[in-house]
Image 1 (tube, each protein chain N blue to C red):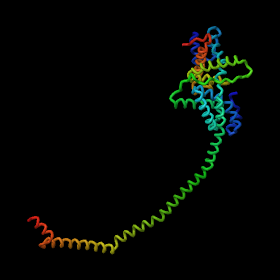
Image 2: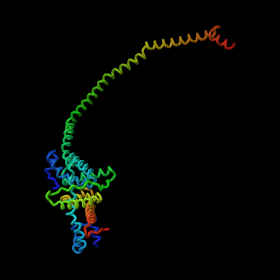
Image 3: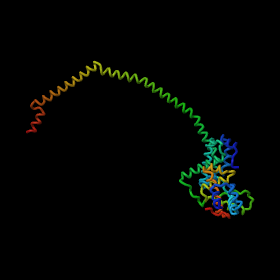
Image 4: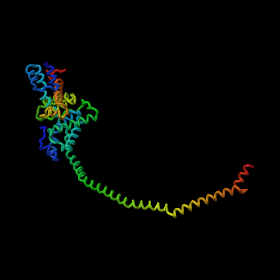
Length: 170
Length: 188
């Protein structure tokens, strides 16, 4: 392998620093040895610069985090303590609602049944039949009276209807 | 030391305030550095760091110890950061007007010219790092964190092992060229 191929493979992460082929090549090739040593020599130069001190304001903000977290934690732990009580109250409320619904249904259903039966009895009773006959007779009588009145009014001379007709004709 | 002790993590899980303070103090620079590697802007990185620790506070109970704690934490940061970038459509460009990097002086009696020289060198490297593609910068940042192995970086970034190695080596090659190091020519 040429110098360039070896360096490219090392740069691509395919060779470790102590790879046999790469180490043997560096031992024999002064250029590659110097190239590699130059890069390794960077460590002493760069390493002290990568760790950046935090700004003063940030350090103060960071110190507040546990304190703020504890406040939130206390609030949430209080909330967590109330959770079972809230659940118990919810269950009790639901149970109460169900019981109430059952009671209402227990009271209401015989009442509705009785009302329906009473209604049927009233509809189907002799009194109701008599009342129905009476109403129909009254309607028939009223209709007969109206018919007679119409016939009488048309047949009598000088009746208002005829007079109007006569005047229009003349 | 980047990796917190299992006892510290356990105490933090139990809600120990002192453990939380210690955990945050130990990890904040690492988390902020990863955040900066993703979102590039210091203000955004600060917000992302805060969000990451807030999330850590809520979810530390789900840490089961299958990986190192920091692998789990940094993965959380990367996921939050990538979610943020996805919500925004894509990463915003790094502004040339970024605040200058704060480099603490190790010794107040040190020669001011040496401090200035060191500060300039750090800023030059930081500027070169800023120009790297996000994946390369992130992989390189994690690579230089203490005792971080390729496999762990792959887990944190959710990438294949060879891809992680390639990101790191290509990033180093690019940085070497940008910093004018001799004997580092481009590989086609």
